[in-house]
Length: 361
Image (cartoon, rainbow, N blue to C red; front, side, top):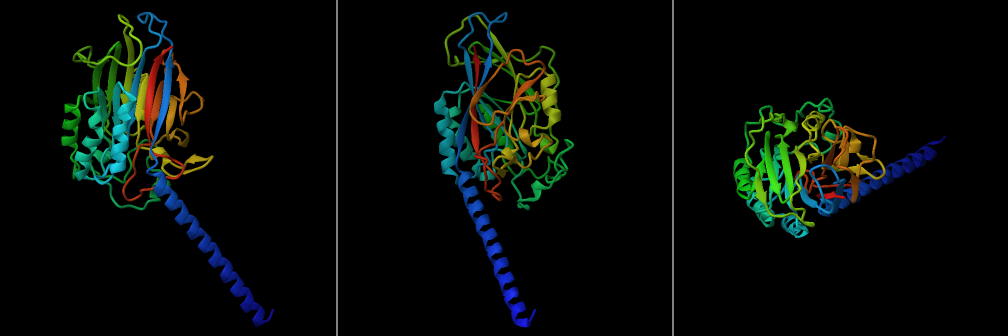
């Protein structure tokens, strides 16, 4: 092969490499652009849990329902007016109970905006737990690092947080807790509570963020719980005289140790967030990581724990039955409404709030 031929081959190879790089850059720009758009494409998922109501203590209960709005991982910044307005409109769905499962803030100055967003829910019964980003502001980090971090696969907390989670708390978590409690919402950070909504008697249990090892599962109070809050009548036909019991657990990060404890404690339904649904997903493959020790198939959606082999409900739909769950709990993991301000993209994983209806059939 002569020098002229070699030069032509080299030029051709260089052009091919340049085209490949250009195509990769273009694809990356397109994906990033779409990810930025998708991160603001909020969705309300509607899921129903159907429960037979013919048991003792539940005469003529058919048709009773309890509507719960689940918000998680809002990661609010004060300038995010669209997100604030979208959250406010969720109150139009006439919820009976509000669940907040942590990571509400991305900056300290966003607390007034968060309270503005939640103002339409004020006076509606609710409960909350905190995540790490209710205590600590997000930090700049390699946006791809979490794809390769497996340090939490054994249930241990991630190393990418302060070694002392009580130190350097720069977010107004105490003011936020006080404001939430003033709005009528129960603080379930390593605590228990009760609430009575119409004919629904709700036992509640929650833990502080397991992702930074703050969880201490609360002991049973040996029947010494305080009197439940009596709230307004929930939606659905009246069922005077019948009391419908349900036990609900809250956690920010759905680590297996916490889910197992809540099942052992008798929870019928558990709410969690933290995973962002994987945040960057591949169509037909799903989440690449969960950022905790759950398997990828449980990155978001409604599923039974311990797993029964049934398909995860990722969109809208209904599942039976809450009454006879054979030692399992329904777990609702929301993809959440926000992201870290340093990785503000979502791909094939829309931000969401979830409406869960408990319905007696």
